[in-house]
Amino acid sequence: MRIFFKTFGCRVNQYETEALRERLLSGGASLAEDFESADLCVVNTCTVTGEADKDALALLRRIGRRNPSARVIVTGCLATRAQAEILKASPSAVVVGNSRKDDIPALLGCESASGFAGIAAFSGHSRAFLKAQDGCDMKCSYCVVPSVRPKLWSKPYPEIEREARGLIEGGFAELVLCGIRLGRYSSEDAAGREVDIVGLIERLIALPGDFRIRLSSLEIMDVNSRFLDLAASSAGRLCPSFHLPVQSGSESVLKRMRRSYTAAFYARRIESLRARLPGAGLFTDVLAGFPGESEEEFLDSVDFIGRMRFSGLHVFRFSRRSGTPAAAMQGRLPESALKERSDLLRAMDGKLRAAFAASAVGSRRQVVVEERSKSVTATTDHFLRVFLDKDPGPGLHWAEVLSSSGASARAALRCS
Image 1 (cartoon, one colour):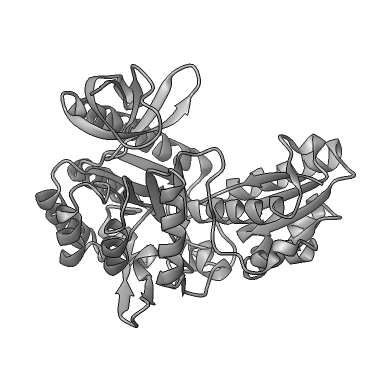
Image 2 (tube, rainbow, N blue to C red; image 1 turned 90 degrees about the horizontal axis):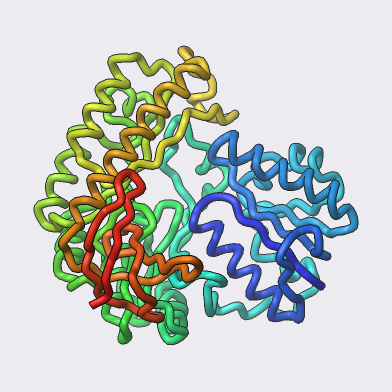
């Protein structure tokens, strides 16, 4: 059996697809390069935005037209939220929600369905994602995620350690810890001692080997003094790069979003972070056009983003998600306003990334090679994409940033 895998969405989804890939291929199946040649298509979906829904449904329709004899399994967040929409696009699909995702190998009769001890590799990548946590209970007014991943779950620490050791021994020089609400990680070690997110990082960076740990995303509330103490004392084992969603810089919009912080609180935490880690990369999510967002509120947000001196933005237009409080709010903005505001923020992102790249010139950074095609592309410890003058091979390497390349936030490096 030849299997095609397609993943939409977050790093957690990407990890879960890798886990499915390893379990299914270990049962004797082979990998198909495209859906046209596959006997089975496994589509792992996202539903954070309407665009994510459209992309997944469009792929399902293409599979039905071009390879009608293929079996189709659809899983992930859209499968959990909108089974009827999936079956309309792909009537013969088997729809498996997030709560049953781990059962897919058993549904297919694979002997490997039991006893899975975590991923051993990360196909096609030099950096491995490692899922530590699942679920969110924040209840932000615009977000559908708590309804499709409602249960807070943490992978037991002994399992994470075993999985991490295997990936490090397998040659992965960077492990990216990921979760839906990573900062809510809570487990116990083999001795029964409590392990929170700081304890998890502390234990992992103490493992033997030449590697580093990166975090996928944290809420600003989790960036406390314990966390900063650990990050500052990790000697580079914890990457000085942080994705800290802000969504808006307007106090009134944050309140309507039901975010659990104020802009002033966020700014104080960023000030503390920069004081301890002055060269860190700092990235964020920004939501443009929340219902009722006035021109003044939007400009307040733009001003706040500028003052925070982010290294880059991930910009999203407001997407109405049925069942969320924001879906019923008055003052929904027209598409023209959503486009205008998101375009302005994306232009701002380009300038921020260019400034971030320029600020790295003359510095010595630790890199991991990610691509070896027409050029050698690597990622620095603080999350800058760079081009190397030669291929240093696998592992961690030091390189000197020689020049930046404008808004693309790229730099030319010479290995040292």
